[in-house]
Image 1 (tube, helix red, strand yellow):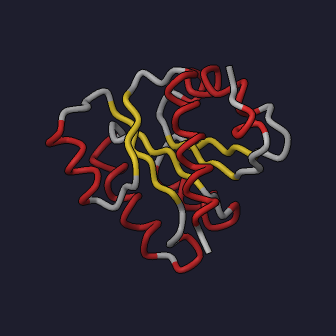
Image 2 (cartoon, helix red, strand yellow; image 1 turned 90 degrees about the vertical axis):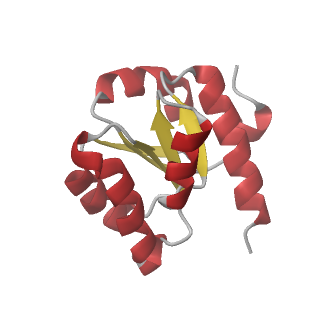
Image 3 (cartoon, one colour; image 1 turned 30 degrees about the vertical axis):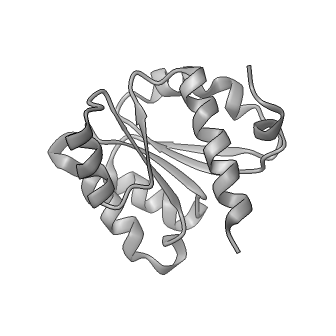
Amino acid sequence: MISAAAESLALRVLVVDTDEQEVAGTLAPFMRLPGTEFRLASNRSSALDIATDFLPQVALIDLGLPRLEGFHLAGQLRQLNSLRQVWLVAGSPFGDAAFRTLAKDAGFDDFVLKPYTASRFQGLFDQVLHFLVLQP
């Protein structure tokens, strides 16, 4: 179930994952929220192209992209002035403390364990709402 806070949130979200269909299926209830826009990308190159035009507030990036592209993408997004404030979320099936530290060191703000579920996305949306409310 989607929280009332998430339902009231107008948000631009970029999701970067090699399995776009699976992610789109899990995100379907969130994609229908009024004012919320999603863009999907399956690799670093297309994600960068989309991000520079779309200017997401949140980017959920699969760390399992080939050749460590998820880690590299986080750094590239952080270097762009227009995207320095994007809330970067790492997605991975590896959730141990060492892997989460690697993600944090790469510039990610948050971490979501894969496989993605509606309840995990609900928690993420609630955290994003809190983050956006606190931004100046």
